[in-house]
Length: 150
Image (cartoon, rainbow, N blue to C red; front, side):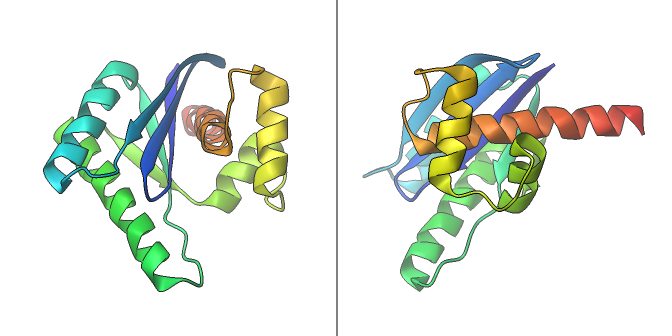
């Protein structure tokens, strides 16, 4: 079962694809300087490369700085539009849910997620965004298994 987790910040989209639990792809789409159209096109092209199964996108988070929260929400919307344009189904998953499913606890910080995922997949995990995307893909696999067994 192929599952892609998508994490993002205000400058890039990070995709991690697992196939039956094995990491098969890590991709980053840089958004700096891109127009809305080119950003969506870039995300669509990467989704078409790696995502042939289920896609799990992190829900937008809201932080104290409203300008940053707006930028993060904008990127989230770009990802959803790209999934729609690529005709790929996706689910939005809250950070507390993917952390609990993938790592056993929702009360885990970014560094702890990075260390746990890096321990599992090795040094190929180079930053916390790829770690988060991998953890979302792991959580996605568990969600799909639960849905299948229901």
